[in-house]
Image (tube, rainbow, N blue to C red; front, top):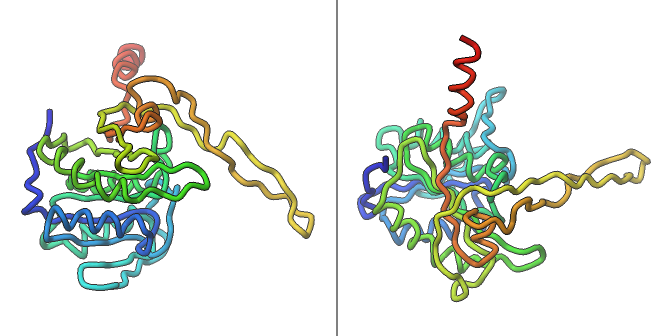
Length: 260
């Protein structure tokens, strides 16, 4: 069942990311958020934290740096940044909504399990704050079409806010690798299959030691209709609801009977 609609004009919006406080994508997202609400706060990692997933720093203290009014950097992961924002910086007046991104690159299919951008939205959701993760797809060696995200973040956010979504769900949004005028529209899409790490590149450093690079991504199902991969490849904005409960309930039912 969908959650209550969100009044963006009265919302306190937390903006975060995994690319770091100085990344171009977070500047795009902050500017877009300010078109929706006058009460926007930015709390993001001090440095890039891509592919750290839902990592939490527990073996050292965290530090917060005040960058400017309503802008803070945390020397930790995206999860740390959201936790510090909601549990400390904004603890007396918690955010109404969390925006994470805009990520430089796709977070499609199985990428979401690695993504710090999605993990930040996940942490906000776990802490009771509705969240949307935004990512801008681009092709290798192409200029990132930030204008696409800049134009469509407010449009997508307004539509989602009018609808609302369940407490245990976060929304994952991917903008296609196209200029704004060539975007075909917005589509609800399922999570596809998109695996990183199939290609492992082995080489040797000047001292003769072997090293390895994790290589390119592979799209397992780029043409399966209804998925986020298919939508963005075809020029659509993909909007995917992700459920935090990872339990596979049909198997749970079978196991309950088998193990009784």
